[in-house]
Length: 295
Image 1 (cartoon, rainbow, N blue to C red):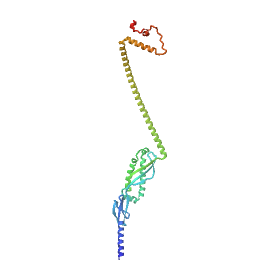
Image 2: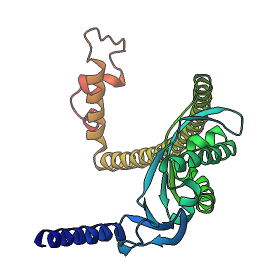
Image 3: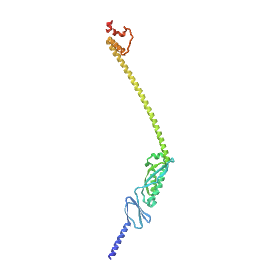
Image 4: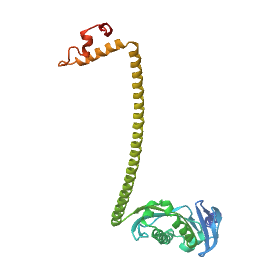
């Protein structure tokens, strides 16, 4: 009797444990779930927490709703002017509608990525086809991907129940033939810009030099004018001083002038003068006395 009772208790506990494990389930904070009955969805978008289901007849599928990354294949696209570029990109996507996602992919992430990949490729092909090579090189990559991201996000929400959060370009390369052409064009543009800057520099140089020459002429003219004015004033002042000195003692001033003339005439070693002895030049040498005494 005791053994039978023990077996019943153990069996009952095992049944309760099995029932609890198959009736209760937990949805994590990073997940969303759908409840199925024989493969048909009977409850959508189950939020995080502890939930109950009917064993055997009902099953639960959970999906990771965190941000996921899809590395796309490196692709070759043509620009507006039919030049090829090699683009390497990746996509950030997230499940936002678990029901639609399950219906479209059966909850398989690989299936979802295989459906997203060609859509991304098509969006990028269309975007690069609207731009020329110069725009692709010059524009910021974030701005370049804004249009395709918005268009693909709207489409994928409807088709797969996923949101396209971002499309990022990791690398944009050019084929060898295009690279050579681009570099040559860039070199030509830089040379043209350099010629324009040099021409502007020469023009500015000539303008500055002309202004400097004009100012120089003006300053020289003003300086010459000032010089002539000062020289005239000096000559006038010298003449006035000379006149005043002469008027005070004409005889002494005449004597002083004669001495200056003697000093200048006999300053050299080979000084020679041919004059008559009674010449006026030798007046003070012949007679040291003043002219008044001579008279």
